[in-house]
Length: 354
Image (cartoon, rainbow, N blue to C red; front, top):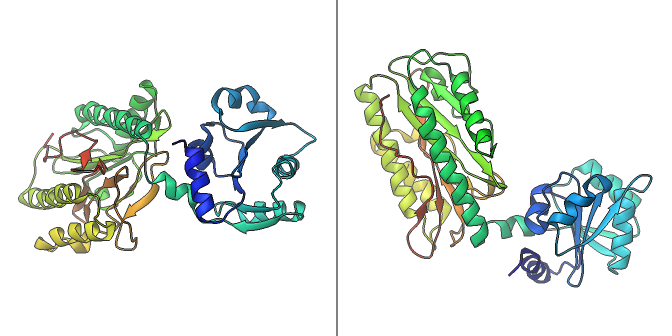
């Protein structure tokens, strides 16, 4: 079933006669459009796509199941929304909650003949379940992430700066036809106690934890992998903490099965870490959805009631962050199937001393 038909089913169930899609990621999921300016208007019988003249040829090469309308000044996007809405004979239009207040205010004032209602997150909810094509694209992005980590291990040595490693990560993805899915995290020594540390000019030293969190966006879909290494020599405390985080990560990957709940899996991670009193240092949720966005809809967290279903893809990333000592995180991307979970990131995760 096409994404357009999946959306129409959801609209019918939610009693939404017409939906205006403005979020760029949702728009790509729905239409295939990869540009930065466009909207779609969907009813049960019609689907319209509107963009400006810069994207005329671009949109016609990507958007196949929507009627395309192109505008240029002095006509505006709102003029076209009014025209398309009238043609679709819809006076009630649902809008996505991601629209800014200023844009919503201007649009509803200009198009006051229409009744505007806020839509539930229909497309974001649909995006949680990946199609076969989406899964294959995520697999390819994960394969590239594995290769990136393999490539970067040669740089893990005393004297190399965090910033140099982060630059090489970005160069690797771009050399291989991808974008970075997010700014890489390279955190060494005391900096590794910061879960989202920014790479600095700090030089790696013997005895450092070095946490590398990176991902690529290939053909529109993201990967997200984290591996932590020790430089030169590991202490008993390094080994103890690392192995407990690894135990937690392996158990949670295995528990990511249809019928489970994200809250339960997050709790499992904390239970295992607390076997040696480490849960107090685990300061974020266990994982998030992965797809067109690196933080795609869905989550594994104590605050999210998330039923687990086949076709979902999550990160699983327990971590421990101890001020003054350092920290680590181990992260894999995992596909929920009808049977056992499929781990998509395959770079080894046992402790490596480089």
